Length: 170
Image (cartoon, rainbow, N blue to C red):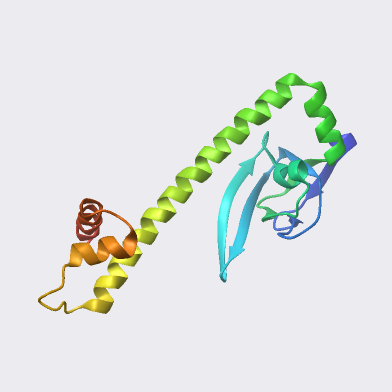
């Protein structure tokens, strides 16, 4: 596999950048790769892959620009396949296609969990910021109703958020 498709990527080298046009898919033979995204002056690690794992399939499958940057985190040998080879492999090998579908499902589930965690953090931040900006509260203030209106959550959900924040010492 390495003789036909392999490339060596030294530690720290960029394999592809967010926004690049490329239809290659990458399979790690040896080494490791970190996939990261820049957002609002921050770098977020989306995934880390090791030997036996693949990455870069999204742009290959939907013919789009790269949505993240891939960096070798150690010296890595990587098989690089173009989109046509990848599509042919999926058409001709049911086992590979089924493996890819299972892996996609796992990755989507992981992304859903991350989005849930982000949403929960955003709600806590909104509640804490509201309290910080409105303190001290006027006597007629109904904090739970106000927060429910701001967050789109019920009073009971707001109470749970306030309890969590209190347990965390906020």
